[in-house]
Each structure stands twice: as C-alpha cells, then as structure tokens.
Length: 76
Image (cartoon, rainbow, N blue to C red; front, side, top):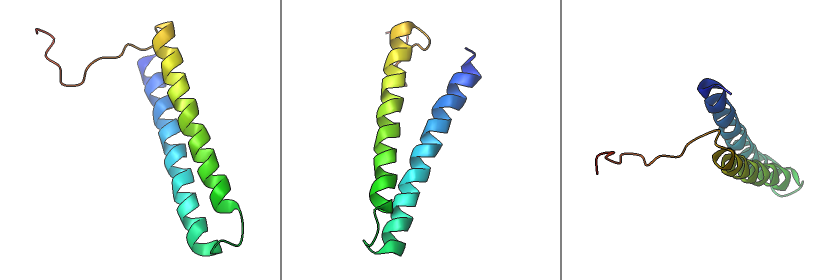
C-alpha cells in the first residue's frame, strides 16, 4: 500500500469522525432532545474513532506503517 493511500485512508476516517461530531451538534440544537439522531451520530463517531485506533494498531503490528517520534532528534 502506498504512503499516499495510507494517508488518505486516515484523513478520510478523521473527516468522517468530524462530520459525525458536527451532525451530533446540529441535531442537538435542532431536535432539542425529541429524537435520537444526536445519540446515533455520536455513537457512530465513537465507533469510527475506535475503528481508526484499531486499524492503526493493526497497521503498526503488521509493519504497514512505522511509528516515529515527532520532533525527536534521531542522533540522540
């Protein structure tokens, strides 16, 4: 899998997570607690977040991505 495809997949997950977060806020303001759309949107957001974390753990374990320290000096 190419690096750009990996990045696109992760960014896609993040966009979906933010979309569902925004949808939850919108439904909370519009529905005023009358429907379960807010709960459903936030549940989807949590599920997507957990799926992204598990996907990253799997990718690191399988060697598809290599974690690195951000801002670390490689010399020491």
